[in-house]
Amino acid sequence: MMRRLTKVSALAALAALVLAGCQTVKQPTTQTTPAGPSATPVAEGKPVPGFTPANFGRLPVSDAPDWDNARKAFRRSCASRSFASSPLWSTACENARAAVSAPEFFQQNFDLWAVSSDQKANGATVSSDTTGLMTGYYEPILDASPTRTSHYTWPVLATPPDLIDVELSSLYPELKGKRIRGKISGRKLIPYGSRSSIDQRTDLYPYAIAWLADPIDQLFLQIQGSGQLRVKGVGLIRVFYDDQNGYPYRAVARWLIDRNQMTAHEASMQSIRAWAKAHPDQVPQLLAYNPSYVFFRRAPVTDLSVGPQGGQGVPLTPGASVAIDRHVWVYGTPFFVSVSQQNPDLHFNRPVIAQDTGGAIRGIIRFDYFWGSGNQAGENAGRQKSTVTAWVMVPKGHSPAEVLRK
Image (cartoon, rainbow, N blue to C red; front, top):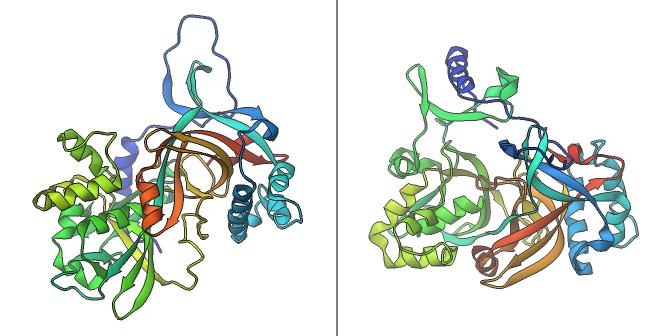
């Protein structure tokens, strides 16, 4: 449950300050428009989604098991009552268990649209990008201790009671989706502590779910947003994202690149781990570069064959679930993606379902691909930085605008 500020006067004052600094965002359009022949217009604002009708028969070649996996993931979205009962998805959810092949299910229930990221000026499209970025993520499996010891010193923290979460739309509907996190100091709401500040707070130790031995494990667990912990004397538990301290995420790879510790091409989870092991004295500076700090909630592991819960509130499916930008897309939306990468070599074409999100996932053609749980999934995820082309599947009888976040 989100924590909200109870002092209305403080909330109103804070929201007014935020409102003064915000600009109205234009609603995205849903159809690509050719640019006119007049003088070159100047691009306006953020890119908006563009859609061009496409045909399933002309998609890049894909494997039948990938379609089966995507239908399984879509069925999990349909297990959400609010999703399955919505006018947009209800018919597809009813048909998701029909005795037809998975490719037939998608072709019979969805229309296909090629996705682009369009820049507009004076109502015309001045540029249109059809490729974007796909990275990978996974669920770590880590050894942990139920108590702090000389070896296990890095906490996996539950959300502390002094973290206040303010949803601004309660006072200003135009700020829907905007929230502020902080803590009370006297009669004021002030920013919550950054990562380095939280690391110094021994008063938060009672809120530790478990303790890890490696600060890099703690960092990557927070970046991934969920994980399995093998807790000594307790057994296997799962932890999921619960809240965050309100600071923007900053990739620690950038800190290393700016200091000529590695190149952008070399940056990966594996290379960051290796650098940290070779430079333990500089790890605190590396960690402090990313002020964002994630808090967790715990849950027992009842079925290891089922993935962690994603942002949609349903289990993720390895190889079929992706995280998307929730400012753009609706959860549960199916896509077909064509992925390519040269070093290391990675190419695949397959359907995927939007079932999660992440702080670093921003953009129209921007995906984070869920590889699964454990070390091998981590190896695959850590090396993925791929070019991706995307097609969105829209339920028949509906327009592409309906799978955009309102």
